[in-house]
Length: 103
Image (cartoon, rainbow, N blue to C red; front, side, top):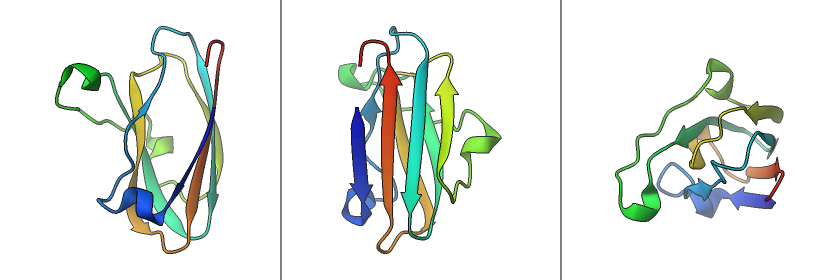
């Protein structure tokens, strides 16, 4: 699955939640950044589909203040992930490529 975000996608400071298959096993994530931007990669185990209020967390200090492309894995896959934009962003893009055995 590939999803690209542009400035209009984070007008409120973060992107919309991206659903993951939290029962599908380990997930490999490639985040490709173009332009100048500083983001946090956040995840949540809240059940947003059932109306839960999201509790967003940055699961690793390596996923806070990201300014360049990176690859990481979720060994324990959350229900949702999103990108919080801390600064920059004009003309920047964020592309996420997610590989999971059944996605």
